View 1 (cartoon, rainbow, N blue to C red):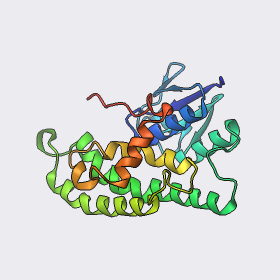
View 2: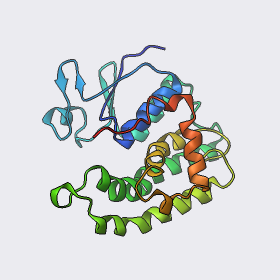
View 3: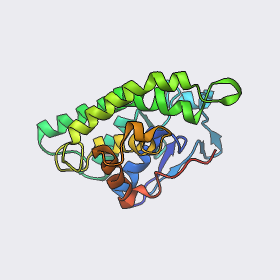
View 4: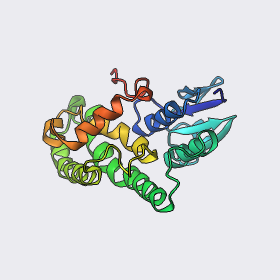
Length: 216
């Protein structure tokens, strides 16, 4: 399928990766980056504010129409181009997917990405060093979220029911980062449910162009 779809964002962003993963799973042709038709929408730039008043990425441009907020973008892509195949038909299970999408983009993102992983990606200590006190303070919340996710997964392949869904799309970038984090064995053990889940995600054909190492 060919559509005029562009993802305004930076590829290392977990939310940008979620939108990219959604496009890959659906089979959509897309482009990605902060430059569009000669216009630069860099982070915190005045131009970015014209397509997202909150100055955040990712922003989806579909035939030049902007749409922001990762959950909304992924639901739109699934509804518009995929006959909602990434969302259950059953009303209760669909609500569960929506519930987990919200929990992932709020609680899990804050604990895993904002408070923990970003300290390694963009350390703010002296001379660009990692602030070990910040890492130590973040770890208990990461462990708590990991426990909640593992309890939800149980013996299932996916987060909700037996269907790969938008909830998995949103969780995948965070978890694939986490299993490669410096303290990963303290947080996600080798034989854990969550590590097995991450490996299943990485084995999906749609994952190969999304979950690539960061070059700093």
